[in-house]
Amino acid sequence: MFERVGAEESERQEALASRVRNELSAAGLPVLTPGLDRVLANGAEAEVDDGADAAGGVYVGWLASPRLRECTGRAFRLRLPDDPLLRHSGEIGAAMTRSTAATLASTGFAVEDADDGYRSHPLRVTGGPARAAPMWALRDDEVAVPGW
Image (cartoon, rainbow, N blue to C red; front, side, top):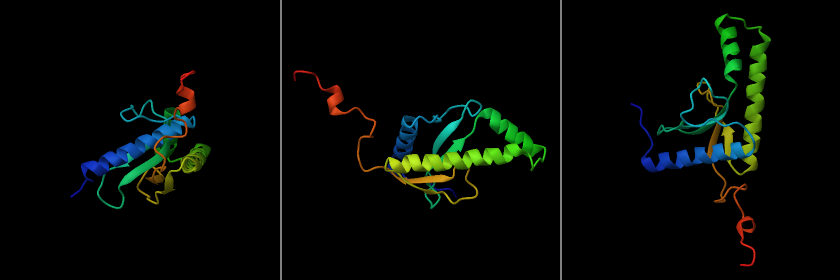
């Protein structure tokens, strides 16, 4: 039977996923929001696996444009293994995974290879930056009132 983490751990994981989305968006990447229809979706996706096992946690992946996904799916359905689009699509995924991992690590997130052949998201985020406020947050000198 599938067992979920407790409410406190679930909340911690959701908060970590939210921080990941914010940092990737701050870097200028398109980021999927929970509930967005997959027909419209493309960009970085952070999701929570709330299983109370070793596979649980926050995972990050890249979702190519709906058109590229459709073309790739067509090549698979028609069994066209030599279609250059399949290699191209794989290269895009690999490049965006490296970029996403580097971006998150630069901001203080602990990121590792998900090492899971069943998971569509290749990165696992195991922790966030120690600082409470992100680097892009408003700073005191930006909100100071002159003369005070």
